[in-house]
Image (tube, rainbow, N blue to C red; front, side, top):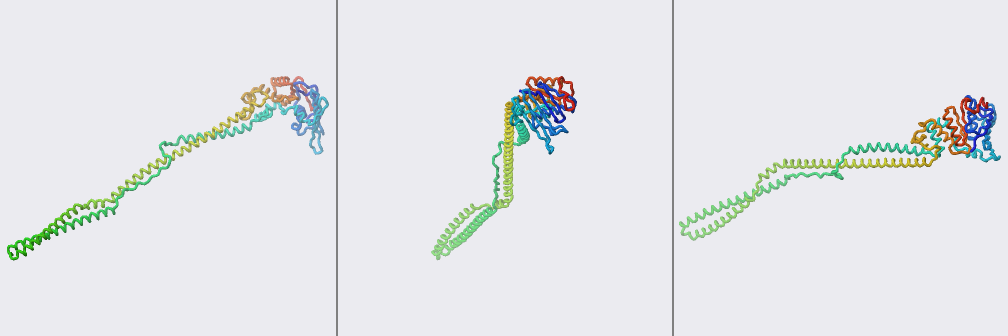
Length: 466
C-alpha cells in the first residue's frame, strides 16, 4: 500500500505553480478562499492518477502552452502526466511512470489502474448523488447489477396484478351465473304430437254401408209381404175350389186334382213365405242405425278442432319444457366455460407468482454472493441503496459517512488515495470519521475546504501554495 508523498503542478487549470511535499499522512487538507485553486489541485491529482476519463476539457492554464502534474508516492514511484497544445488547438497528453527501482512499465495507464482499483469515489459527492446514481456506483463497486431482475420483476408483477384483477372480475361473474345440476348435457328437441283427427270420408263410407243394409232389409220385407199376399190369394182359390167340389161332383176328380195341385202350391208358397220372413228378420237384425253416424258426421269439425287444440297444447308444453331444459344446459355450458376461464387465469396468476419467487430467489442469491464494502448494504425493489433493509438516506449522517468512506476504500487498492471535494460540508464528527477510517485502512484522504482554520492545512492562494 502506498500514499502520496509529494505533488508538483505546473500550469494546470487555475494553478501556475504548486509544490506540496512531505504530505504522506492520512489527512491532507487543501484550504483557501473560493476560486483559489483548491479544486484545480484535486483535479490535477485525479488526472495524474486516473488518466483519460478524468482529464478536464481544458487542462492547460490559460496563457500557457503546456502543463504538467507529477505525483510521487511514499514507496518511491513517480507518476508524471504532461499536456501540450497542438497546432490545431487540441490537447495532447502523455503519461510516464517510474518505479523505485527505475523501471518504466509498459501500458502505463493500465498498470496504474490495476493499482488504483476500478472505482474512484468521493464520499461527499457520493452522498450528494441522487438515489439512482448512488445505486449505480454501488453496483459498480460490488460487481452486481440486479436492475434487469428488478425490471423484469416489476413487469411480471404488473402483469400479475392485471391478471389478479381480471381473475377477480371473472370469478365474480362466475359466482353470479346460474347452475342447474339436473339440466341435460345435449340439446333437447321436440317431436310434434299429431292430432287424432276423425276422417269424414270414413264416416261417409260407414254411412253408405248402413244405408245399404237398411235398403236390403226394406226389400226383403217387401218380398215377404208379396209372398204372403200371393199365398193368401192362392188359399182363397183353394177354398173356392173346395166349395165347388160339392157342387161339382161330376167334376170331383178334376177338382180334387186341382185341389191337390192348389194345396201343393199353397204349401210351397207358405214355405217360401216362411223363408222370406226369416231372411227379413236376419236382415233387420243386421241393420245399422244411421242416426248416430249422421250425428258424428255433423260433429266431426268440433271433434277435430278439439283434437288439434289438445295436440297444440301438448306441443306447446313440450316446447316449453325443451326450451327450459336447453336454457339450463346452455347456462351450464356458459358457466363451465367461465369456470375454465377462471381456472386458466388462476393458473396464469400462479405462474407469475412462481416466476416472481424465482426472480426473488435469483436476486437474493446474487446479493448473497456479492461482496459489499459494508455489511447490510443492498438494494430495494425500486433499485435504491439500502442499509439493513432501510433506505440509506434515512440513516444518520455519521452512518452515511462511514458507508461512503467504505465505498471509497473498497477493493483494497495498492494506492489508497481518496479525493473529497466540498469537504466544507463535513462537520467535526464527519471529519473525525474520515480521519479514523483513513488511518485504520492505511489510506490517504485529500480534502478541499474553504478557509485556513484546519490545523496542518495546505493553504492555496492565487494558484499557488502560501
